[in-house]
Image 1 (cartoon, rainbow, N blue to C red):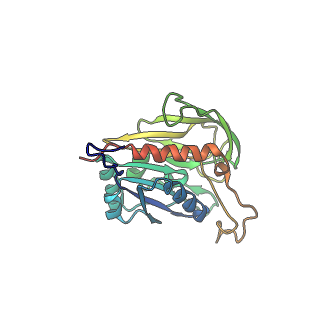
Image 2 (image 1 turned 180 degrees about the vertical axis):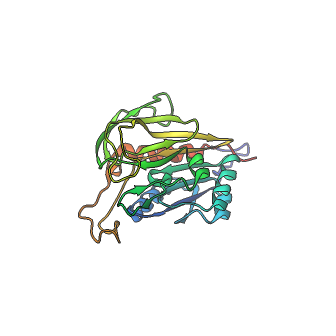
Image 3 (image 1 turned 135 degrees about the vertical axis):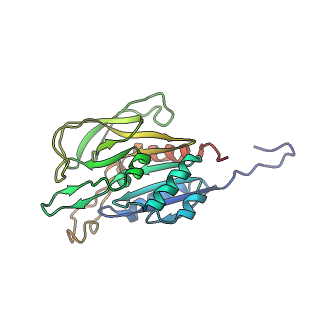
Length: 258
C-alpha cells in the first residue's frame, strides 16, 4: 500500500505489554510461546513483566496480553487498567489471569474475593476445576470472526468453573458435569461454562480464553519437588494457536484512543 506520493506506507508501531508470571505453571514456556506469536507482526514491540505494577507501561500500551496465576494487581494497578480499558485498550487475558488462590489449613484451595474491580474487568473469577481430563469445546457464536470456521474440538486441559461478572459475549463454551476437586467451591455440576468470551469496557474490551494450562517438572515447588510429567494441554493443539493468533489480530483492530 502506498500514499498519494507513491511512497510505501509503513504500519504504525504497536506498543504491547505482556504480563506472564505467578505460580503452579510453566511460565517460561508460556512466555516464550506468546513472544514468538507477537513477533510474527514486526510492528508489535513488546515489554515483558511478571506483575501489573508498572502502571506507566500499561498506560503507554496499545495492547495487553496476560498469562498469570494468582497474581493480584494492587488497587492502583487495577484502577490504571480500568482507565486504560475505558480509553480503548484491548486486553487478551489467558488461562489463570482471573485466579486468586489461598491454601487453607484444611488442605482446600479458596478463591477469596479480594480483587472485585479486577474480576469485574475480566468478566469472571476462577473458582475450581475438575481433574485434568478430555472435554469438548463447542462454538457458541459461529458468526463471530474470532471463531468463524472453528469446529468443535476436544482438549485435555483444566476446565474452569467460573463466577461470571456482567454481560459476556460468549464465543466458545463447554458442558461440565464434574465437580472441582480440592477447592472450597467445588460441589455440584456447574453446567455450561464459557471458554472464550469478550467483555466490553467503554471503547475497550477484554478477550478471555480459559484454555492453556502448562506445567513442567519444577513448577509445583515448594509443594512438590518434582512433577513427573510435562503437561502442555491445549498448547498441543493447532486450534489453540489459531485462537491466540486471532486474539492478537483482534487486539490490533482496537479503536484508537481519543
